[in-house]
Image (cartoon, rainbow, N blue to C red; front, side, top):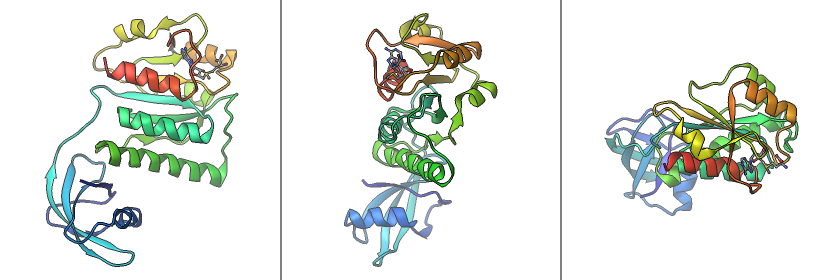
Length: 241
Ligand code: SAM
């Protein structure tokens, strides 16, 4: 059944007009009045609903029952990823959302190829958040992972690691420990942060600062993985244990 994210208050029996994006999606799918759909607003669970009325641009729906179902990963894993080529970060956010990532922190690193300022940065952030929403609509997640405002790596480290649990810096060069070893020491109820570098890697100064801030260098093996592959591989391995 088609799923739509509707960031509005939802209640049984309510009749509401879908936001423009969701309405367009209903029309693209050529749904007709009477069609059954699923809505979720990110506050938990999902709602069965049906299309009540359609005009050229508007779609009205009637909500039916709420189901408190969640399809979240068993543990919270946050991805703190250095900005990389835009299409690669889109891909990473989509796939990591499907895999259950709890949130994304885009970081500006010395060797980040993508530089964002002002209006362009705001548009990019809105786009990434829409990518995460679309991945939730597709995958069945009812909680949309947050995509934070991009922050410079030194500022992020200086603010103190955002979560109580471990932070693994995905590191190609020694000294680093195999992921399986780091995973064995990951406390069961602690959130995990994965810190990964841009296409050109972290500078030695950045890597030293991350280690000093408490990030543990973790290796994913001898092969050089792309900036979007490494965090996804670590996420999948950490979550599917
Ligand atoms: N020439 C860069 C270097 O030597 O760091 C390659 C960077 S790689 C394309 C992008 C990021 O992916 C790295 O900064 C690291 O965070 C992560 N990465 C890639 N391969 C990895 C591996 N085998 N183990 C751990 N992290 C890896």
